[in-house]
Image 1 (cartoon, rainbow, N blue to C red):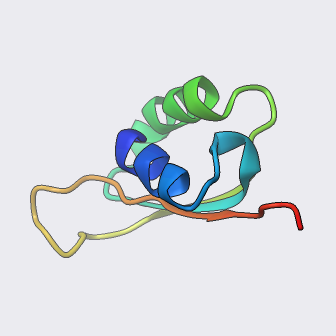
Image 2: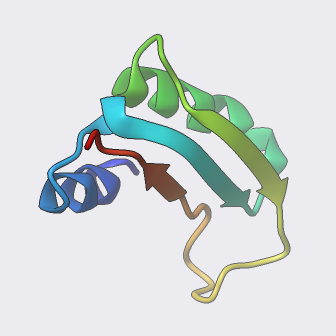
Length: 75
C-alpha cells in the first residue's frame, strides 16, 4: 500500500519522515486498523496529521484505498 508513496517521496528527495499530512479515502471504514498498521510501519512513531474518509468507491472498482500525502523538505 505504501510502496508507491515511498517511490514518489524518493523521487522528490523526501522520505516518510518528511510527511506532514495524509488524506486517506477508504471504501470500507472497517479496514481502518489495517491502514493504521501500515502507517505505523512506514511513518514510525512520528506520524503525520491525517484525515480518513469512507467513500462509496474509487475511480477503479478494484481499488480499496487511496493515499494522498504532503511532505515538507527543509530549505
